[in-house]
Image (cartoon, rainbow, N blue to C red; front, top):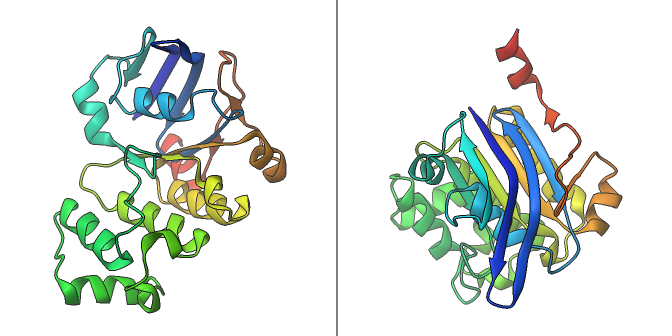
Length: 220
């Protein structure tokens, strides 16, 4: 499966929210997309996941425009004011809601067992805003990856929570190694610290994505 965003731009009421940006990502690949604050991280994430129609440009899934299929295939993870959990909820509540969305058992015991399996049960009563940043992001990634039909994860600004970029980068790499496509939108500072090839918001000629073993094996 391939998602191809070609010259995607989004206009707001008072000017551009996102200047034309291109990106191509397939299953088993990881794309890091960097930009300064206000350059359209969330707008791009919404566009490539089929949840916002771009003002210019196109987003194709396997060569065709199909927003409903994009919405089913792409999980939007921790997007500010869109898919990010409410800060006041407990971790157990957030996990229960996500498990229910994935069609899995979501009762108290199921949630407790899931948190234990992910070394997080000690935080089950913690307000979500107080869960350690590296744990918060890792759990949201794991939960999104469990949703039926999801083949691509789009993670939005994980660095805003304060953890060093290598923590969420490692979690993103693990999902790409498992065969999912992963798009991570972050700040320019995080991209520099990671020192990996990064696409840029507002740019149409981008470096290749990072291909992991599972994807490479499929191509052989």
